[in-house]
Every structure is written in structure tokens, then in C-alpha cells.
Length: 601
Image (cartoon, rainbow, N blue to C red; front, top):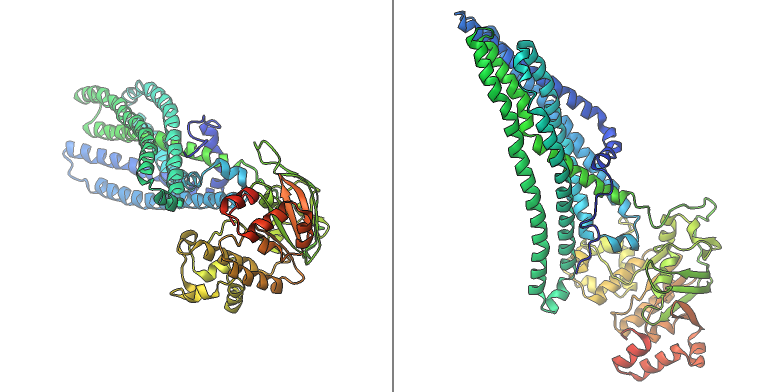
């Protein structure tokens, strides 16, 4: 089952406060927004001139004066001026909304690059996709459309009331009685809408996480004939989202119906009393017509007030969800010491290294001490869960390495800039991840401008050249998302070539030969010895045939170093390594090997 910790939780902060936190991003485009708002305000003035011109024309006709050319031209001029100002205002405000959304996505993407295992263990990829697309889209919509509607709501009311008072203060008073009920209902409805909006966004995140997880594991689902079960599970997730969306839609529909009804009550009283004033000649027909148009100008915004409240609430929830991510500090702090050497040679020293994963019952590494001089090749072995990968990740700070425990060239790894450390200590991880791009771009990922002959040399060293040459378009062949068009061994050799091409002073290979045959492995190891002469190489393997070529072999047991030595030295001790060598040499069955090594041969 998908675990989504955010679903159903309470808001982190008052929603208004969440919206106010956006002001840092909005402030960069205050000029556009200010100009747009000013233009909208001016457009309301032009709009208010239309009933005034109409009033003059009607009264002239009522008096028998046919000269209505001036009022007619005034209406045309007001309409044209309103069109120009509204067009400018809409472009300015919508452009600002687009730019704010762009900045937010850039900030979110950059922030996610700094997150580590704890963060991605809590949040699904689908959830992050929802925040990057749907949540930021809601904020953009608020700025682009909510600003326009809010300005109309405010300025139309102010301008409308001003002209209404100039025509008849008695009629103007009739619009006030329903207003307290309108504001009270809007306030209560907005709180319910906020909760409903949060539920919709979080259920959408859950839906996205479910889809992402299932598509990533589609081969496993199909291999185990679980399509029907997964469709049923998705139906449940989809139903929860639909239910949350229906609840929000009901609230929005109710608000959209009630707000105009309350506003329309104003028109009933004005029509009755205004007609009386006209009949008693205290108000002209033109004045009453203009007044009623101003009433519509004031009341019209209240008809969309429910939509505006909905926009604000959904954008506030989206903002809160974004800052929930922004507020999480980077798990790996990049605070380098300026005294750190600019170039790494490759001398590695580990001193009393302890490390435990959050919530784990025991330490993953316990008092590890190890020296690896420049140019030495080391193989790290051990059962599953012994701490091999955890140890390697400490060297490049993919995990938060404790201070004073891991040194490279005598400098604490925490003092190196992360970019420098990870550029000069190249790690090829267990998961042979490839991008849905051409082979060439995958192999030269760190430097796309690298010469093609260097790419071919790396492919040759990883025994991947023939595979590429057999592809339809060679190096330009697109391998599909996550390298779906390649076999497991081909993906491992591709990622190995991506590591070799960098010629880094330190190369870390985390079980990169598990899916290749022994003949291919021998070719790769031969190339490694040639290419890595004088450079530090650390690899994880479960094969003795791999480890025997290393200068030293380190055996980890329950996070601690149990054995260290050369191939011959460890055979002589009769420990774990010697037993593993015997099983593999004698061709023991898979269950014997799994019992000894905890991993497939």
C-alpha cells in the first residue's frame, strides 16, 4: 500500500499567513502587478462613465431633445478606453502570475536536489509532481485571475457606490442591509472551503503517487499477474479523490448560488423604492436607469465572490503545501571550508565511523576504521544489510557523514564543497538508472560536450561498445525511460561506462557486476586495472572472482569490519571470505550461497 503521510493532516499554518509568505516571490514583479491593478481601477472609472452618458441621453430624449450625439460618442469613447486599459491590465497581471509560477517551480526543483533519503522516504514522487504542477498552478491562477476579480470586487464597489451616492443617497442605503449576511456567510464558507481544498490537493497527491509507483513497477505487476488487483486498488484511491472533489464542488456550488441570491435582494428593494421616486418625480428616468446600472456594477462582483473565495482558499492550501517543502532544511549541508584542497588525490581515512538510519533498531555502521592509500583497489564484501552501501555513501556524503570520521587527503569530507567532492569521487550506484535520452547523453551525462571518441572509449572499457553498435542508431539511440529498452546487464555496463568516462581520482562501484556474466566481468576488470592505475578504486561485490583482483578485501559484518586482507590472507584465516570462496568454487546451489553471502551469485 502507498503510505502518504500528508493526507488528512491539519493545516500547518493559518491560510492567510501561508499566502502572505508568497510576497517574496510576488515582490519581484510588483511593477507589473501595480500597473495592472492601476489599469483595472482606471477601467472601472471608464465603466462608470457609461451609465452617466446613458442617463444624459435618456433624460434628453425624455425632455424631447434629440441631441444625443455627445452622450453616444461618450459611451463609445468610454467603451474603447475600457477595452484598452483592461487588455493592458490583464496582460500585465497574467504575465506576473506566469513569472511567479516559473520562479516557484525553479525554487522547488532546486530545493529537491538538496533533499536526501529521509525526505524521499516521507514524500512520494507523485506528491512532488502534484505540488510542482497542480499546487503551483493554483497559485498562478490566483495571481492571474484572483487579482483581477479582487480588483473588480473592490474598485467596482467603490466607484459604483460613489456614483450611487451622487444620484440618491436614500436608494444607496437600501444596498447595505444584506451586506452583513453576505460577509458572515463568506467567512464561514471560506473556512469550510479551506479544509475541502486541502483534502482535494492531498488526495490528488495520493493519486499521483499511486500512478507513479505502479507505472515504475509495471513489469513486476505484469509478471505476477496482479493487473486486476492493482486496478481495484487504484479505483479506491481514485474514489477517495473523487469524493474529496465532490465535497469541494458542493461547497463551491452552494456558495456560488447563495452569494448572488443575497446580493439580488438589494435589487428588489431598490426597484420598488426607486420606482416610487420616479413616479413622484424626485428622480428622473435617466437617473434611475443609471442608478440601477451602478447597482449592478456593485452587486455583480458579489456574484463571483464565491469563486474568488474558492481561488484564495485553494491557493492558500497550495502555498502551505509548497512551504512545507521549502521549510525542510537540506539533509546534507553544503558548508565547505575554504582551506579544502581544490584537487583530490585519493588518500582515504575512516576513523571511528558510526551511523544509524532514523528509526532503525541498530546502527548501520559501528566503529568502522579503515585506511585506503592513493592508488589502492579495495573490494567491500558482506551479507545483505552489512553496511556496504552505507559505507560508500559516506565517502560522497549522499548520507550525512558525521564530522571527524571520514577524511580524504587529510581533509574532512564535510569541508569539501559538495559539487567538488562528488565530481572527483565518482560513484556508480547499485541502481543502474538511465535517462530516457540517447545513449551518448547518458554516458556523457556530466559533460555533454565531451568528444565522441572518449565516449566510445568508455563504452569499450565497460564492454558496452558492441551493444551500442548493434543499436538502430548507435550512440543516438534513445534508451527509453529508466533504460527500459535495455537488459539489466546492459544497463549496468552503461552506468559503469558513465563512471569510467570521468577518470575521477576516486571511483566507487557499488555492486556493478551483479548482472553481467563472468567473461564480461573479466574484461571489465582488466580494463579497470589499466585505466585506474595510480587511482583509488572501491567496489562492492558478492563474487570472489571480482574481489580476488583487488589489492585488499574488506569484510563487513553487522556494520563493523570483521576481516581485512588480500585474497590469500583471507583464505588462510578460514572466515567468511574463505567459506564464500569454497561455496562459489565448488558450485554450491543457490540456497547454500544465499545462506553464506545473503545475495545471489
